[in-house]
Length: 175
Image (tube, rainbow, N blue to C red; front, side, top):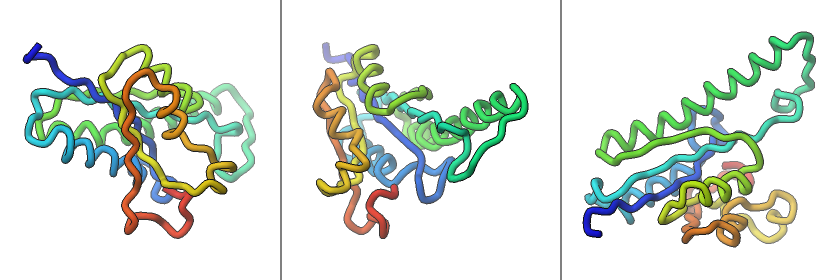
């Protein structure tokens, strides 16, 4: 039992402020907290799993109408999204390799809260770490929170890491 590693899943997403491949404030904070408070110098005792869930855009473009003239247009959009997701995961994997933590990452599509809970059920990590924007009750009604849903429904212990006060953007919904 002493040789068993602790498996920690960290849900990550892109920044709504900087875009790909930059991690969101809450994802970066949750990752750094995990490294500094849980793993510390005991890198061989942990495996990290990074899950990035891409939400399919209805029309494929942010804040713009889309025109699809051929099947190639859809294929290009899917390829672009996959490349952007890989760049995001690259940030976390590179950081783990710098400090010697075994890790792996993957990209799924769908509703983040549902996909995260499904992957927890499938992989059975010892712990799920998610970032939280720290939204107020009024904002939660309109935006919803992935972290709160995971806390209630994931089949493992969940730690939700709030953003630091000095990292909260002018619009708290941004991340």
